[in-house]
Image (cartoon, rainbow, N blue to C red; front, side, top):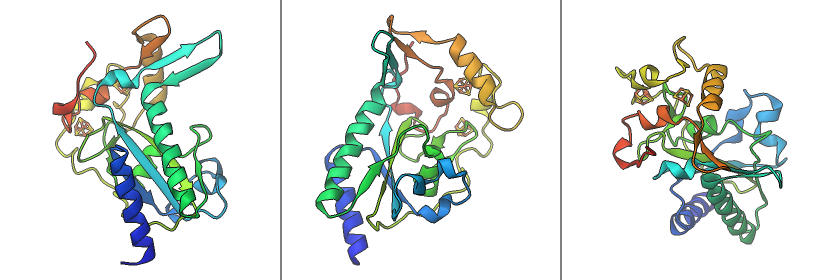
Length: 223
Ligand code: SF4
Ligand code: SF4
């Protein structure tokens, strides 16, 4: 085993130990097709690898947003867990002598694309990452690192979506009706139909996650 393979295995084992559900490694060269603001090179000049981690939304309540208007702060429950895991990975790599940086959301990477480029899954007709273990029931975060980890093979096509249109038919905003994702239609619907869990906490429409049969048997829906 080469030193890069050893480090990749050590890091993967560490991530399993601390409860990270999904991890993948992408080659920075695959990102040259994106705008400069969405390339990993923006965050770390000498990067060698993009690390993507995924959190399994085993209960959709973990996808809720909490906003404290008085303090101008907001929290996303699943993302808080992911961020904490990113810091642990950063610490692990630092101990091995490699610099890393956690990528913010904005400006940031197209996380779903990054995960597909790392071989973690494919982009489905619902415009979300579909993973073999958890379907689309995942949230993602990424780091860039100078560590030369072994990258996965990109997955360009979804093997799950053949002969299936469930998400297209289930979307209340008809956001997939023209053969590609209509972000404006989705946002307009979501903002008008927030599920209020409390004065400060809301859930967005998750129908395209919930309706997808891949990994559906694992999820617990919010009524
Ligand atoms: S519901 Fe069907 S078409 Fe939509 S993402 Fe899932 S498998 Fe693909
Ligand atoms: S979040 Fe809701 S409105 Fe937006 S694409 Fe998915 S199902 Fe449609």
